[in-house]
Image (tube, rainbow, N blue to C red):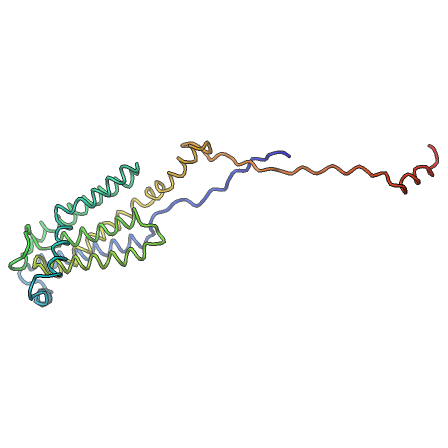
Length: 273
């Protein structure tokens, strides 16, 4: 029995998210930018101010009990103390030596908050509702808390959640982002349009960045398999997988004739040469 080397077929090239993520991200960013221009054109009375006032009125009533606890927790999560969550995720990625994922996480989180949120805040500088219940900075539009919540949902879905479970993650992330939007209005820290634009801007920026970095993230996600193969002697970095040997059966030799009585009789009856 001999051994024949067999080269395994190449699998499909790793890919990132499809063009749908890019299209959705651009649409969300465009809506946030359009809302910013509309608000900036008339800070005192933008076209949707009447609806913002009505929605804020529905958030009245006693601000205590379970609702106050939930709003306080969400306010903490979106504020400066809440950075322990994204930077904790960054530490996990660094410990796993996922350098591309760590760079993606840090760059998108900082870029989304500094460029998108703070850029629009300085561009619009909309007044906040009267008597906010928490400490706030300048500029009501857009909501930084809502933007950070939506941005983190997309980032964690891209980096930590398997593709087969992302639908459930998107649903849960949407509920979480809506809860953050509710808390900002309930605390009289933002108008409804502020929170909607913040969520759209944060999610849109993360989706566009995910599409751009998707191929590199996909390649990194399969790289640990290659390292384990190299440790086992199967393949090394930058080298093609070692061919797999499989046994090849050789044709069996014809069996020798068995001396039976009939065969002996035929041999004895045959004339001599």
